[in-house]
Length: 253
Image (cartoon, rainbow, N blue to C red; front, side):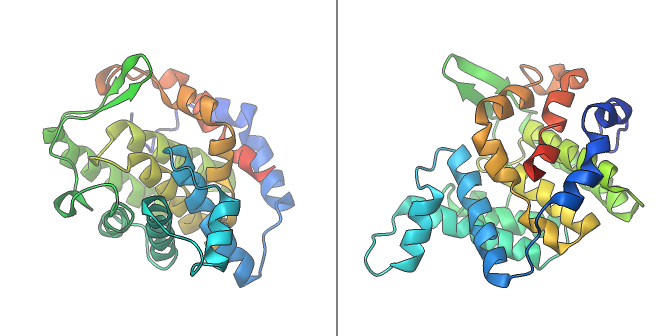
């Protein structure tokens, strides 16, 4: 399935899409830079938490206030690197080069230097408690899949889209990246970042404030359940994707 596909858009509107303009209108966007910076850090913390980082938001902010009294450690560094990637994205256009640069920044604690900001050359799977849950596309096809992916993103960025369409395609962008799994590690963080990055490209810089990462963390079981559409890249059933697509707008509640 291509991320430009509108196959599920009509049903999406019936489930949640028609609520999006009101949810946006009622959302409390802040004009305060300190609050904006705090929300950026919050995004990075919650996205890291989804991947197993144990530092909660309260602990991280207290560390920020008293760095000289607290030992940092790998988990703190992991969050700080992801904050840098968000800040880079906030100042740069969404394209493939900048996306890879973001991965290079936040994967410093995750991967050896030669793997950072580079598409994988290994076969990778997603493993759960009962074993292999999903097998991603073979490494020799990743480059081509990502070429198509960013061609579609460019098309969407240049298209005139309303708010409902932006949220619909942003969720597909997130979902498709998770399924391609282009990196050796850091794919979840990358998918959540690019989803929000696309929204801000279309609707404005202030949309960096929406708490999508927090919502996904709070509803983590459902997040993982709905992102799983098949056992491998070739058996993905996107007819089941609406459960995932409908999650993003509810972060505005």
